[in-house]
Length: 243
Image 1 (cartoon, rainbow, N blue to C red):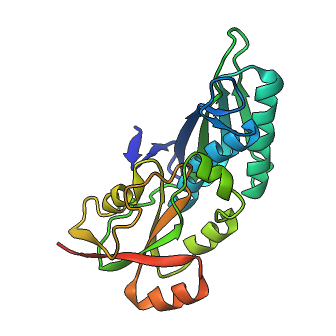
Image 2: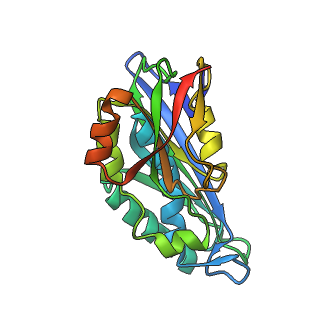
């Protein structure tokens, strides 16, 4: 039986292991005639892969396979996208992971399109997070979408930083932000709990963060000052308080 948690599908496969599945898609971003944003298709595919990888890392699952569905011809667009996917896997320290996929060889296309599914595994029995204590809400990164992603691609936070934050004792929950914005995802972090989020600012709360250019963290208040001091890319934007 498959369970849903946020944007993840969780599939128990044995008493020891569960599969965790995440996916994302991108269209109209590339070098085709009718693309809305002009950029190397390698970058398009890399950022498309980044989204499910970040979701899985924040959940604590280990990626084991990537499937790419490229809605364009193999040469040259598909090959460029595969180059970007492989480069992103290297950045995520996953260069040996299983990679499979398909391209569109039957029909000519005028826009770039790619969908990516990542399969991960985790030890059976992991409990999905439910907020049970007052916490600080911290933000990593800035909300970028479209041309802003292209402009700021070299300053967006790294996989090693996210993995390190995931191991911090004071970090209780982490959640990537996508097209629905910070406010939506922060409220999702309170799901099934007796807590609500109170923001310290209204700036950029409803902006799209495109390909996971923001990650939200729920941090114990007693650990907040230390974590903010050691990770200068973080900033406090709110608090989770009892309803």
